[in-house]
Image (cartoon, rainbow, N blue to C red; front, top):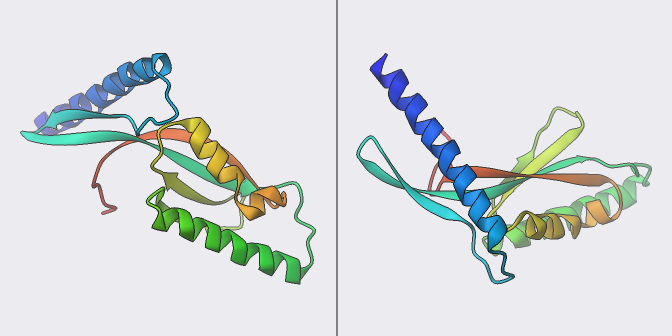
Length: 147
């Protein structure tokens, strides 16, 4: 029970801090801004929380390309995402693989939602209308790994 209470307190603290940080960022917008962070202590360990942006890649309105055109756009799409990964903008990326509306997602390490939307909209498959994007902010401890 004590462990559960610690976890609940931890997550409540994260959401409270994230809300405060979001209010502060809305008041202080700058084109040279870096991703928002705050330090949080949990179970005796200091963690740096960072605001990332999840870019959901959804099926777009225009999916009637020829097979050759679709393959060309897919290669350009992969090259574009790869360049963002190499630049440290995308930190996690991949397809969903279930054939549903959400075709894949990426996690962007940028300062603002607008910056994530701009970069995502420059994807060749988005520009061609094969994909569309939805972007959501997401707080995560820096250096976290999938377990």
